[in-house]
Amino acid sequence: FENLKYQPFIGLFNSPNQKLTYAETDSMGAQGNVKDYKKAINVKRVMIVGGSVAFGIGSTCVKNNITSKLIEYLNENEEDKNIKWEVINLAFVSSQTTSELNLINKYSELFAPDYIIHLAGFNDLSFYLQPNSKLYSFNFSSEISKYLYTSNIIKIFNDCTEYSLILKVLKKIGLKTRKDK
Image 1: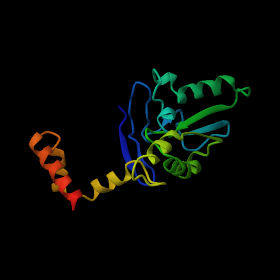
Image 2: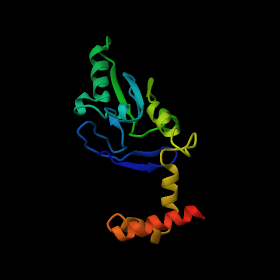
Image 3: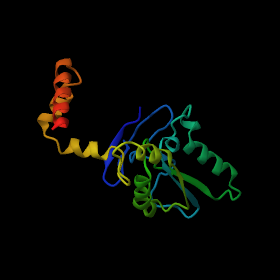
Image 4: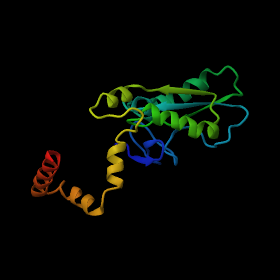
């Protein structure tokens, strides 16, 4: 499974250097064939942002994901053989439009894409239909915030409840009595 790591203004983003059956990320956590931030004069660049489909979930292998297929298609069908197409895929699982717009703002000047593909929307709908969801918040941002600002004793107790039935019961009783107040 893919690993995600928290990034400010983005939310949970791809961990670097992952080798999954359907995608591989570089040292930044992105996919693609971009080797240098500075774009050469004979290069055209596409930036992809989006959720799991744009990331490649559902692909049978790395060479069949959207990033690899787009690189192959653009370079094979370019009429001017002096032009080389590069693709940088910044999509990640459970991404939402807020994160994607922040990715575009953060990286468009750095990578100078000629085109941006935004393949998204389902995660926004899915998460905003959840009870107590907030518009323009990152996926699980309240859970991340709660965890970051919780004491270490509570973190240890919560971790221990995963392994002990007695602690699970005590936790459940504690949560129920807190809600009743």
